[in-house]
Image (cartoon, rainbow, N blue to C red):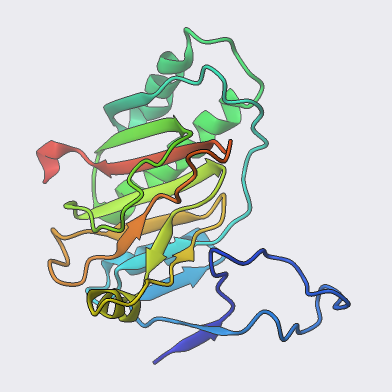
Length: 226
């Protein structure tokens, strides 16, 4: 079954067309079907859909949860930790930096997402990466050699992804038409370890030379659990 909803193409702004009030139907913003292998929803419970063998992307659509100021000097953070100690570990990694008002809510939100991920994947430890990006990191479309990866963007443009039809079309030489997570959205991306032939294809948005910067969270299985 194909569910219809409005999905924002990455190249189009999320705004009403001229002369159209918010809440009205704008013909300039077409209804784009959600592919059968994708689940979207406004509650975190939608993320559990990634356990369905036919689902390769589950997205919790939410507004940016934290107002974050400048990212200047933000350290690249990468570690593996038990869920119970994750918040404390992230706090320790930020301890040698000037304390900013948004650090505490960021730590709390990251710990919450890690807990959700661990519960869905039946884990007690996760690998976490939180980094500032201002260039073209992972800008080519690809599928990850992981089981399931959590990706969320706190600042800047969200991750772009392709539905299976677009992947097939690009294999035939057509230019892909990516869709895109919004800032704040939480996505569970199924990789090649669980979906060898249909892993979700995605990329980081190319931002080099634009002056844009992103704050990206990635959560994976601990290597010992693979």
